[in-house]
Length: 184
Image (cartoon, rainbow, N blue to C red):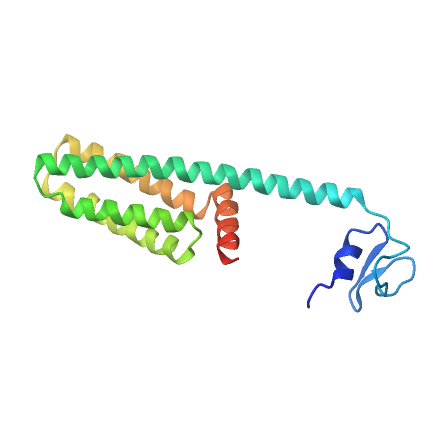
């Protein structure tokens, strides 16, 4: 059901009434709107506007908070991934898989920031792969103090990443607004 220009005006009128059968009606005439340019009964319902404006403001604040969380987290995550690349370069010289991992992570984070849901899901699968790769394979190959500390740090990042991408309410609002913005 499309919303007409009349409905937009009537939605902010003090005399609006909603009927399940007929939809939006005037409470004074009990009819649908039939005015040409303006309604002679129209009185702006400032309470509705205040409520709508406060909801918009709250969503904007939550979205900004979610964006900041995502950017801070992404920076920390990229830093730890870069640290893993550097340490693997100096320890074993076998850093290509970690470098490849870092580049994919940056690409994934960029597309998640732009509101791509399929990337968010793919990135979560990539996190599980990272947990398996770093958690099992790296600990089996070289079990030293660094690998255990690295395992704990990166796994903490992975757990927070899942929380941020799928549970955090601020990020959900930000992600939803990004998706809407990028569809326009």
